[in-house]
Length: 153
Image (tube, rainbow, N blue to C red; front, side):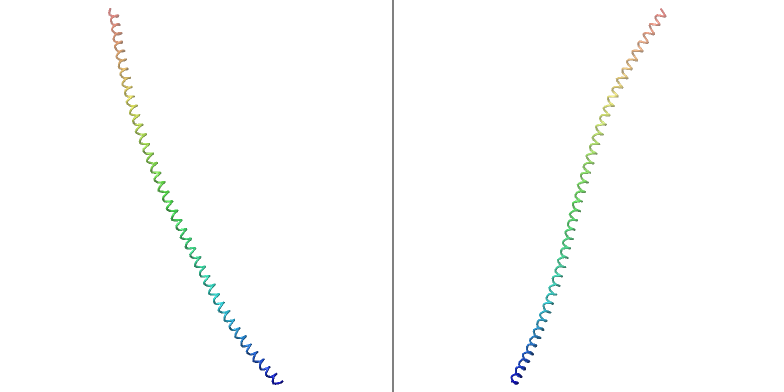
């Protein structure tokens, strides 16, 4: 039995060495797989981070472009509003100037008409005064003749 025991011990020792080798091989393989998984995980995280950064940058650029486009649109609209206001102001100014010219012309015509009427009235009054003066002068002559006749008679 000692031989069998010896043989079993050798066999058990051999099995143990083989199992240790197998275990060491499995541990190395597991460690290698873990390193590979970690490297792939790190690469994947790195790629996702870069993707996210790129997407964020794209969003910022798109946002800046949109804001810029909106600013341009607002500036164009402001320019249009200013032009329309200037046109409207000019049209109102022209209308006011035309109305002023029309009123000036109408007033000048009225003034001319008043002048003509006044001159006509003045001429009429002068003629009346002249006529009254002549009548009074004639009456004064008659009265003076009568007085001469009465004092001379």
